[in-house]
Each structure stands twice: as C-alpha cells, then as structure tokens.
Length: 119
Image 1 (cartoon, rainbow, N blue to C red):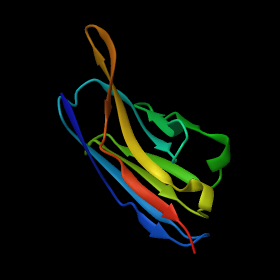
Image 2: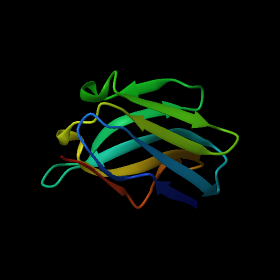
Image 3: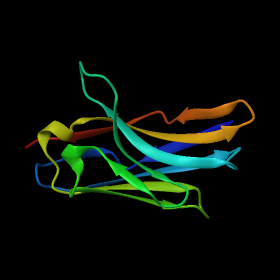
Image 4: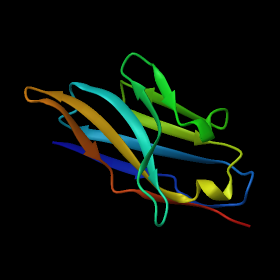
C-alpha cells in the first residue's frame, strides 16, 4: 500500500499563486508516475499534470505556462506550483501515483485538497 498526504490548498485571489505538495509513504518502491488531477463541482475528474520517474512531464492545455510540476525521488514527493490562478482553476486537487506491481500498474489517490480562486 501507498499512503499519500497532500498539503497546500486554500483560498487565493485571481492572479495569485499556490503550491501543492504530496508526500508518498509505505510501499513506495516501483512508483513511476506521480501527478495531479482536479475535480470541479459538477464536472469529471481531469488530469492536470503528471511526471514520470525519468522526469517527463505532461500538462493539460489550460495550465501550460502557469503550472509547474516537480518531483523529488529521494523524498518521494511531488509538488505543483500554480501561478496566475484563474477562477476556473477552482477545484479539489488530488495527488495520484502509479506503481508497478506484479499484476500491472496500480493507482493510489490522495484525499484531495481544496483550491478556491476568488476575489
């Protein structure tokens, strides 16, 4: 099992910044992708960004140039720096890691952290 603990959500004005962090513990060997998803009220959960164990990144179009994902493999953490936040970025943000197992890849999710962008 992998446990994920997220931190850093909150309320911010449009144009502001927030930094989300996610720390993984437990059976952390063979984790290869770490990322962030979000779910706004009435909408499906969507991928925001992810990063592989060799550093390749992937961003949803609306956050390109504003959000940056980074990863510390030694500390088993993934961080999302969010700049130039917009009201439409308001959502619950979830950390997800994918771990290789003998039965194939397995997803682990954090509990979610609320991000609200409002004046």
